[in-house]
Image 1: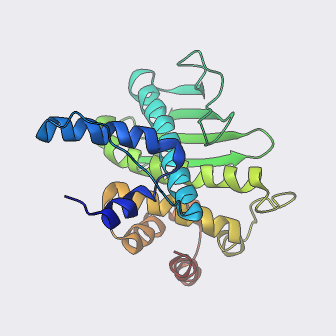
Image 2: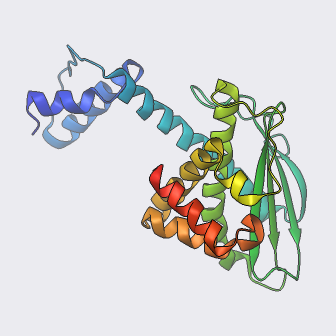
Amino acid sequence: VLDYEQFNEIIRLFSQQMIHTIRYDIGNYLNERIGFDGIVHVENVKLATDEVNNLFEGRMSRQAIRTIIKDIVKVLKNEGDGEYVLPEDISDDMTYSFINGPKNITVELEIRPNKDVKSFLVNGNYVKHEDTIEVLIVYNPNGDIKKMMYDIIGELNDLIAHELEHYNQYTTGEYDFEDDEKSEESLHYYTKPYEIKAQVKGFKRLSKVRRIPLESVIRNWFDTHQDIHTLNQRDQETVIDTLLQNV
C-alpha cells in the first residue's frame, strides 16, 4: 500500500505521455489483486522536467539498442557470412526510426570468418552525414558460434550504445565532429570528450546487462581489446582513470 507521498514520488518520474498507461495498468493490477473495478484518478502531478526527460530518453535509447541488436543477432544466426544493410534486408523498413529516439538510422553489418581470430571480434563506427552505424563481426569458423553468442551480444550492447551516443552528439550539435577523425595517436583519441562520453555510455550498458561492476567491465575491455585500442599499459591506465572520473 502506497501513501500519497510515495505514490506521487513514483508518478513524478514519468512524463504526461505515460500517465494514461499508468492509470490503466494500476487499475488492472488492483482489479486482479483485490477485485477493484473503479476508476484510478491521477491528479495534481508535478513533473520534474529534467528527471522525466532523462528517464524517457533512457527508455527510448534502450529500445533502440535492443531492436538493433535483435536484428543483428537474427542475421548472424539465420543468414551467416556476408554484408547486410539493416533493417531493409530483413524487413520492409528502409531505416530505423524510434518515437522520441534515433531517427533514420541504418546499420551496415559485415559478418566474416577468420581463422586467425582466437574466438571473435566485434567493432564498429558511426558515419556522420550518413546516419549509419557500421558493425563488423569477425569469428573463427573452427569455433562454435552458438557458444560465442552470449559474449557477442554483450559486446554488441556496448558497441551500439556507444555509437548511438555519437549519433546523439552529432545530431544535437553537442560536439563538433568536423575534421576530427580518429587520431593516429590512440591516447589523444580515447581521451577526447566526445569519445569518453560514448565509452562511458557503452560500458554502463554492458555493466547493466551483465550485472558486473562498471570498473570491472572497463578494465576487462581494455585488457582484452589491445588489438583495437593499441594503448600501452601506462596510457591504458590514463584512459581508464579518465573514464572512471566521468562516470
